[in-house]
Length: 319
Image 1 (cartoon, rainbow, N blue to C red):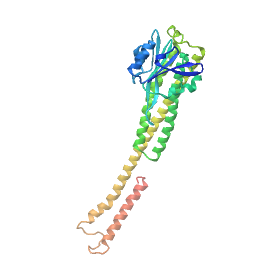
Image 2 (image 1 turned 45 degrees about the vertical axis):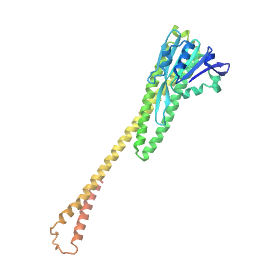
Image 3 (image 1 turned 180 degrees about the vertical axis):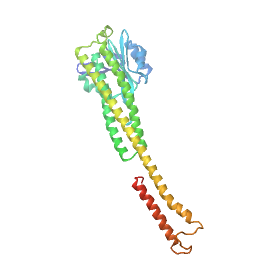
Image 4 (image 1 turned 180 degrees about the horizontal axis):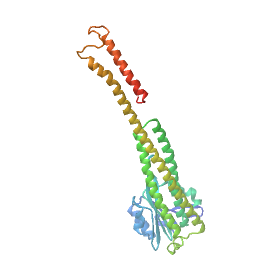
């Protein structure tokens, strides 16, 4: 999908590929080869710059050529309620155009629509770049807040009943946090490189950075670092939670096995007595074989012996 926008005054106007104007924002989402060729022919941007963000495994990086700059940023992507992933977003900046390339639609660009056009300008490319980066960091924080609430709900379920499904959900969330950590740290490296090279001659003819832009970039770096710290905190909490539940499950299993072993010992006493006196042997204590209460005496002896063993185990807290 190819969309072209341009800020005119305080409004955002959508253009067609045939009327590509300077200062336009070219937005590509899962573009076809024809759309990529159209943008390449109209802007002069190399095809490998546009195609870099179409590789799902592409890491955050900064690349500079004579007539354009490529910034790859990893953005968060919600797959389902337990699974998150990251996706590369390519931002290509030339003297005349601002180009974004992504494989899938992201909530980040919902902030850059006509109803919010007063807050950004497609022709102020440096500030627009940092505004997008700021929204990326905010989206990470938004997803982390959701993960925190969702983890609390799963914890409440596990406190009531140890379900394998809930444990798998925690594992999926922990895996998502690993993706977030890697992506945020790579994004931070790119942001700091932009901050260091803001006065380089390679950038000045493409990105004019004013004091307000530098302040915005510093805010983006702070947001990114805050997101990294929150991800690390959630990972540590989640790891501790999973270790605690694993210990609880192991302890519960030990208690069940201990209880079953104790019951086996207790039941072995009457079984042994019944095995001895159920054969053709004389009943002890001088009772004749035909005594009407002989069976009752044996049962009473078995019950008494079993009770004594049970009390001994109970006293030792084995039951």
